[in-house]
Amino acid sequence: VVQLRDRGTTSTELAQEWQQAGVSASARTVRRILLQDGLVSRRAAKKPLLSRKNIRDRLIYCKRYRDWTAKDWGKVIFSDESPFRLFGASGKKLFRRRQGERYHQSCVMPTVKHPETIHVLGYFSAKRVGSLTILPKNTAMNKEWYHHIREQLLPTIQEQFGDEQCLFQHDGAHCHKAKVITKWLGEQHFDILGPWPGYSP
Image (cartoon, rainbow, N blue to C red):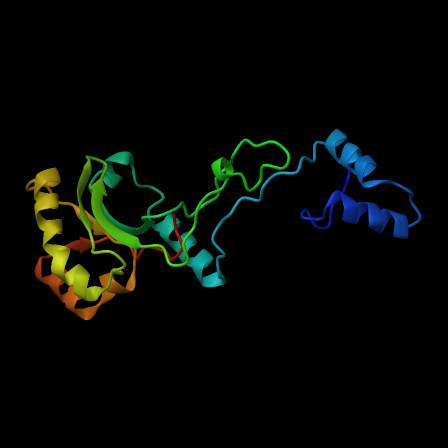
């Protein structure tokens, strides 16, 4: 079984290491040996970089609610906001092309230096998705905007839960924890679930 100290080492770099150790092998030979051992080159998966505090908070949250059933979670309404680029994709896009066509017009993805962005806020539960609020272009969510659109939470809860008791779970963003928002949530007698651990899905 091949042992790798660094999974990101290329076959060429491995061949050079082997040669320095007195083993004559080309990069092609190295690739063949790696493939025989099931080690295929793939694009790295991305995941948030978690601090010790993030890990601890996640564990505390999971232990606190580990015995909850689907019925329990069905009584929770969540809020979340996300930015969306109006021009170009924020991720990678694959094209099928022949050799020498890398910069062919049909194989490139246009970009701009400062793409316009919109932020969208929404509420959702196991019952259904609530209404969405779209902020003006290039406007980030802050306590002023959240204070302005907070009233949407009340009709959404009424529509989805009626007089049934429910819990509210926000993602812990600064705008949710501002004093004016915390005061308003208290005045509405909301039961807040959480706190939601940072950098969680």
